[in-house]
Length: 531
Image 1 (cartoon, rainbow, N blue to C red):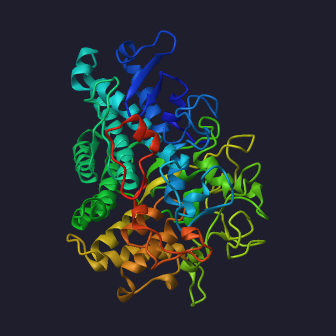
Image 2 (cartoon, rainbow, N blue to C red):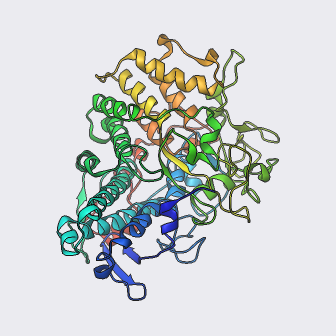
Image 3 (tube, rainbow, N blue to C red):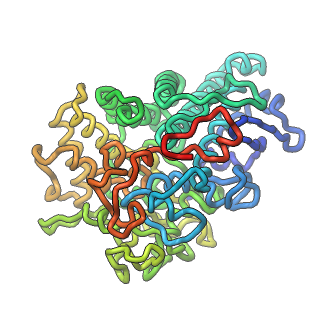
């Protein structure tokens, strides 16, 4: 069983925070005799409160698996941060299509969403719920507040580290806001708690803010790999590298050189590729030295119907054996398109071990969007360990498998792409070496899948990212960066709502500000092309 310090600390509930997002109206409801004033006078409470900031990415509410949701107005399982991030980043692309007919979920893959889409609203609300939690913790751990509460000595050092971690988590949430929505309301710890209309900040200004936060916090953060599951310096550097890689999309200015700079920092931090690719997605993946920053799951302590519960159960159906995935049954939801399958075509006869398709009883073509047997199923994440042991939840509902939000292979790919985009501080030879390290693993240690320098180009990188990072919530962002998300130059099944796919309006490169927030905050401006 995994030892999860932060998750176990979540057994101590410090406070419940309900948030009306646009107005930033907060109601801090004491649990028993606990109030903000006395919670932060006792340093023993700091780490349990910090744990809530982390687990808000994995959990959907104040109790598991359901019953006291963080975000109202949608099914609690749907409202989970990771589940909605998957829906935004994967269901909208060639990598995933879903059978279910829940609300407007099919509008995501069909690319026919609007500002009333409840799944987009849930993602937006989740982002700002996380930001609200982070802001409150940062507010209560300012230098002045720490002094007023008598926090001194080593406790003061730790409190500042916790504050830096909270700032990282807030930066991560704002990164997702920048990527998905562009210009959004902006709130920090400097805003007073109360009812007001937060001003909308431009995408470029938000980029600058997140950049400045990520540059400021490493001095107070733990060194790389100091404690599994917590954000450290390498997590901040990785997020900076990702921010810079997408800077041309976000700001209009290429920052490939900076992407290389921070990728180099991560690469030099002591991480190594997991020898066996499949082990990255098993119930004991916390043992991997490749994972830089995970969203932790635990079958006993983080029970819910989003996150990894969703990812593992929803991919299982048809002739797939749920027991092989360490679960009590599949939800028959997710399959992939034939265009994604085509990324693995290799005329040499070699086998890429990342082609984790289940084909028995499945057709390659999605003729009917609502039939699980149409489209190859995916068998990437499992609730079994590398030794074959099933996860800790005896019911088979809730997995132990962590989600690898950041890992080394992604950083290698960032480095190579930034070099190809003309960034300085790196070189093509090193880039090729990193790519071939990834591909050697993909071919079980064989060099047969390695490529040569002339083959290393930007189209190859996009395809390689698809092969390496399936279902890891990267694909939409990648396709946008390469100009393929809405464009007719790359089509996949049911893109644009037709069987063979079609190009769609470029305004869909941004999600709409939810109509509910436009009503709540009349100062907001909608993204172009939406009402």
